[in-house]
Image (tube, rainbow, N blue to C red):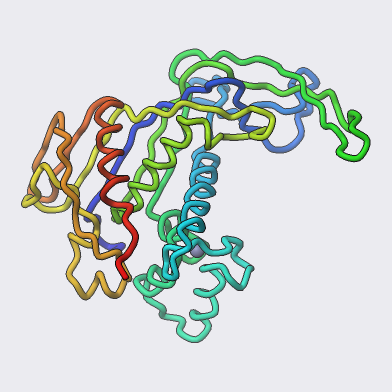
Length: 303
Ligand SMILES: [Zn+2]
C-alpha cells in the first residue's frame, strides 16, 4: 500500500485566534526584551521572523482529541487508542517492536493491522501515519500582545511564581495544509470532528488551555480529493478499502467500508490517466462534506 498512492485528501486551512493564543518557543531567550514566554517564530525566505503554528503542535492537539474519542468508544479491536508512549508495554510501538524481535521482516500491512486507530492515523515509531500537518504561516498581519500571568500555589492560594510575560496572538490568520494519504474514511471523519470541536471551543491549541487561552476558528477554504483511476462517480468518496483488492484489505485489517455517497458538488473535476481530482471551494462546502463524513463514516463495527 505504501508503494502506491491511491487516495489523497488535501485540506487548505485557515486558523484564526478567537482570543489569546500562545504556542511557546522552546529554550531560553538571551535577549531581555523578549517576553518570558515568546510565541514560536520562523525565519522566512525574505529574512523576516514571524510567529507561526508548527504542524507538530496542531497534529499533537488533534491526535490527543482522536485518542479521547477512540477511548470513549472503547471498542475491542483497533478502534481503541493505545497507551501512546513507545516504551509503555500497552503501546502499539512496543508491541510492534516485540513482534519485530521475532520476525525482523514484519510487513507494513502487519504493523498497520496491529496498530490502534490513533496510531493508524498519526503513526508511531515503527509506522508512518496517514495524516500530515504542515506548518501554518501568517497570511497578512497578526496582532500580537503581551499578557501577564501568575502561577497560584494550590497549597497557600498565594502567587507562587510570576508575574511572567506571555506573548500572545489575538487576531490574524494562519494558513497551512492537512493531508491524508491512502486513508480510510473514518480518518477523514475524525479529522472533521476535531475541526468541529475546535470551532465549538472544546478543543484548544497551544499553551494555557485551562487559563482560557488557545481558542481558535478553523476554516477549510479548499478541499481537494485525488483518487487513483478514472471510474469513480463524482458523488461518491472511496475509502482505501475500496481501492485495494480484498486480500490486501484483510492483510491491513482495514475497516470494510469501501465508499460513501457524497452529494456535495465539486467546483472542479480533473481527470488524467492516473487519477481523478475533485476540488471543493470554500468553508460551506467543507461543512457539508464534514457532516456527510461524520454521519456515514463514523459508524461502529457490527456485532
Ligand atoms: Zn496505538
